Image (cartoon, rainbow, N blue to C red; front, top):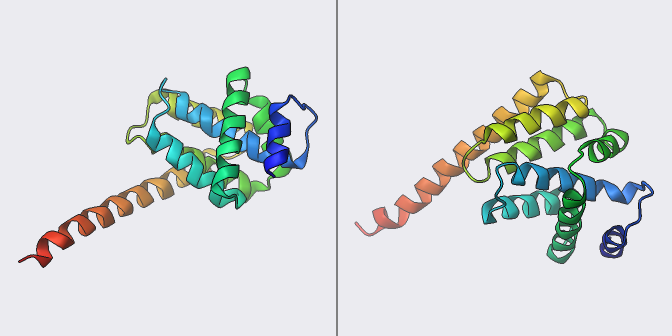
Length: 163
């Protein structure tokens, strides 16, 4: 996988099944940079999601993200990335991709209007319905809320144990 990602950096343009990770990662980079910043929280979120989705080791994730950043900089067109996702992913996989993009959009704690617009556009290009896009967003917001609650509970625990 690592060599395949590097070959993409060298300019191979013929669509292959192994290009899906780069397309997915490039869409995530687009989502992360819509507000003109690509902060550490967004980068960590993308790395985690790519590692989980494609079962990659950290070095392969970093190489994949570098390839995606290069591809995203070369093209501000989403169609090539979404077309590949439509060809390679079934409907639940495309909804999962939208859910991943919501996670990236919310990673910095704020949903920028441009990020919201991008998610609407990408969902349309992926043939994901407004309903499924909205449900994916709700799942991400529930997870964020649960993570904050768990984090708050963990922070209180050591303080309460000292009493």
